[in-house]
Every structure is written in C-alpha cells, then in structure tokens.
Image 1: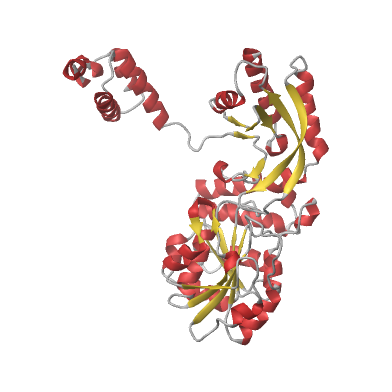
Image 2: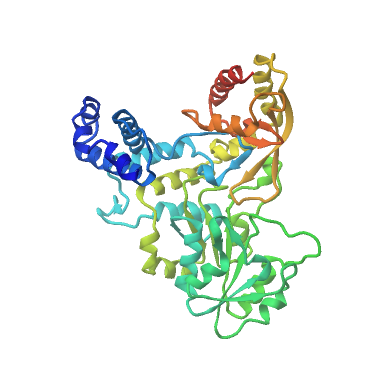
Amino acid sequence: MENNVLRKIPSIQKISESKRFIELCKIFPRHIAINEMRLILDSIRKSNKNNISIDLLLNTLDKNLKELISAQPRKIINMSGVILQTNFGRAPLANYAIKAMSEAGLNYTNLEFDLTTNKRGGRLKKFKNIINRLTNAEDAIVVNNNAAAVFLGLKALCRNKNVLVSRSESIEIGGGFRVPDVLEESQAILVDVGTTNKTYVSDYESHIDENTGAVLLIHQSNFVIEGFTHKPDIKEIVQMAHKHKVPVFYDLGSGSMINTEEFSIQYEPTVKDAINDGVDLIFFSGDKLIGGPQSGIIAGKEKYVKLIEKYPLTRALRLDKVLLAGLISTLQMYVTESYIDIPIWNMISKSKEDMLIIVRNWKDKLDNYEFLHIEESKAMIGGGSMPEQHVSSYSLSIDFDTLNISASEFSKKMINKPTPLIGRVKDNKFILDPRTLLENQDKEVFKLLEEELKLIN
C-alpha cells in the first residue's frame, strides 16, 4: 500500500516542467525552488498522505517560498494590557532613536574614528559622556543585554572568588535565567546569606573573608516578597562592605532614569540613586524602562569598569553601530527631558479618561452589538519591571457567551489577520486595552472589529 502511494507522487522533473513552477522561478532562483520542493516531497513521503497532486505540491511550494522572504519579526497590534510585553519585543522605540539607527545603518560612521585627531577612536566615548552625566557614574560600558552585563562583570572581576547574595535575591528571571547559574558560568562562587524573607547587614559581614570578591545585590524587579520581611538599606551594606575593602555590585534590572512617581506609579530605584548610595557597579537594561534598543549597561567606579573593558570577552558582547546609535539617541532624550516622547512613558502618561474616549468611540460606532461592554481595567508595566504595578485604564470587552464561537476562537482569527491583533481572553471574553496603541492604530483596530463582528453576529 505504501509503495502505491509513493508511486503516485509526481517526480521533481515533472513538477519543474509545469508552467506554474517556471513562473515561480522568475521570482526565486531555480535551485532554491528545487531544493524546497525536495523538502516538501520528503515530508510527504514520511507522512504517507494520499491524493498528492501537482497543484497541491505547487500550492505548498508557493506558500513556503513566500514565507521564506516574508518580514520577520512581523508587526502586531498589542492590546493585551501589558506595556513592556517581552514576547512582543517590549515597547517600540522612539522616532528619534529610529532615525538615528537608520542614519547609522545607511551610512559609514565615525564609530571608532576620532574626527578631531583623524585617528582610531573609542566607540563608547559619547555613550560614556551621556551616562556619566545622567547617573553621576565615573565610567560606563554597554553590551548586548543585561544578562550579559551581569555575567561579564562577574567573569571579569570575581572568577574563583566568593560573591555574597541574599537568599531573597537568588532569583530566576524570564527564559530560565537564574542568578546561581550565572555565577557558576562566570566561575564566581555563590555564597548564600540570610534567609528567604529576612537578611541583615550582619549576614553579609559574617561571610566576608579573604576570598570574597563582591557583595551582589539584585533588585526584585519581577516579584514581591511581603509579610514578615527585612532587607537592609543599600547604604548600610555599602558602608559595611567598604570597611572590609569589598566592592558592592547591584543588578538593578530595568534601570529607570527618572522618578516614576511623576507618572503616579510606585517609586522605582534609579541608577543615579544607586550611584549616590555608593554602589561600585550597577548593571541595568538599556531597553525596558529606559526605552531604548536591547542592551545591558554597566556603570560605576572607573577602576572596575576599566578592568571589565579590557577583559577579552567584552569585545564579543559589544553593540554594533546601529544599536549603539539607537541607545545614545534614547539617552539623549533624558538629557533634554523629552522622554515623554519615548513610547513606554508616553503610554504610561496617558490618562484613564483618554482610554475611555477610544473604547467609547468604538462602542458607539458598533452600538447595535449587545455583547460589547466597556470595563475598567489595569494595564501592567510588564517586561520584568515594577511587579504588581498597574496603570488604570478602560477596555472594550466582547462577551462570547451568546455568540456562535468562543473568545479563544475569535482570538485566533484576530491573530491570523495580515496585521495580527493580540488581545486578552478571560471568562470567554475578548478584552482590548487601548493603552499600548500607536498613532492611528485605533482606526485600524476599529476596522478589524467592524469586519469580524459582522461575520460572527
């Protein structure tokens, strides 16, 4: 039976002589099309499918070849109620940053060329000047993400040395990234101090010996421990550690540059605060709360930064000219205090009433649908930043209890649109929070809703 099925599969020779295959080869090189067809035929042979026609094979080939050259990552519309959604690439970049990245990508640049001396120069000079002014740090470098920054700092400065970490801060962040694993890979030796809920300065001090490389503090940026707890003030830890000539490093995670209370949300430690508290090195993300491209920044005492900068692995983790241009231009928006134009802060700054206007406008235009409701909601900051912090909002809720499909099925239909729309499914409702909409996307969303709701009602 199997051999009969295989005999019915057309040969590559026969397929390649078809008019449609010849047309596809005007778009794609013939060897690419032939190789793709071989892969398709191999898959069919393994699956033992019946009724294999040349038309079916060519449809599959057409689809596969077009998929190879389709844009990736694809643009989506985020209405999930999460501002810094890691799976969605976190927040979009500011127009100023996009322009700078485009200029750097399209042209030759003075990346490592000093225009004053007409000689080779350092690629981080401008970056250092800006970070040092924004944070009061003595020096700084940047690598490709914060996980790399922490790993590099420990690898360069604490190999085979003890690093003291509170048990309450020995955490896991997204993607299975665990602090104990990072220390092990960096060849630093993890020394747990204190307990899960209570750590005192004396817990750190009692573990300091001649092999102690650093005290590592880790900001609890993606979870909260509440109840019977205690953790010492950073200044107290710094004072004790420096008395024993031990540096204090701080993985700040998100790394806010501004006072978040300006936006009516809970205070988030800033990089400048940590520097002023006397911390020797701070590790933080250039994306997330800063709002730039993915990067990891190390700022602090010059003597430690210089040692990391000279470490061989640093070169392997550095930013290219395009990402560096985007980061620098984003940081410049903090220098000029125009950070309200950075998408994350623009989204957070919008009032609850602004959101109500958008969803009310949608509902009014779709007023004949009784399954549409306006609900108060809370948008999360997300991205491993500011746990349990929300921004009050309004959402449009579509109740599917009386309709012929479920909210989950409707969600799949919206995801399969040319521009996927991502909402939130809860209690058989499809919920759309407009806080993360970009310019003119509210019109695009309305059009999608209008078309799809007509089909299901």
